[in-house]
Length: 132
Image: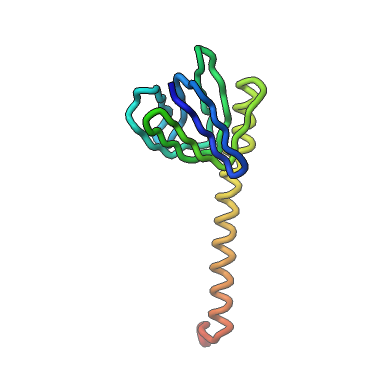
């Protein structure tokens, strides 16, 4: 059996007696069992599942990092969500985490454009602009 730690900026959740874990990394979905080799993986926003005594549980995670060392699995993520049906959880992961990643990409692109425009304007004000 394993101990699973799910760490967010606000809390650390400890889950004992975990038989297996399924997660989704950059290379796809994978599973971990107690005798699995030590492992590290970058995680994508997805639904993490784990089993205790034959019962399966689900948690939505906002990407992050997973490490497995001996009998401990640690996941660091920006945020997690629980509750509802699996379909509800999948919908919430999509709207709250995956769509947020797309919004962040667009904001970074806009920010980079604004920084470039500001640098160009400062260069022109300082007299570095083209002469007619």
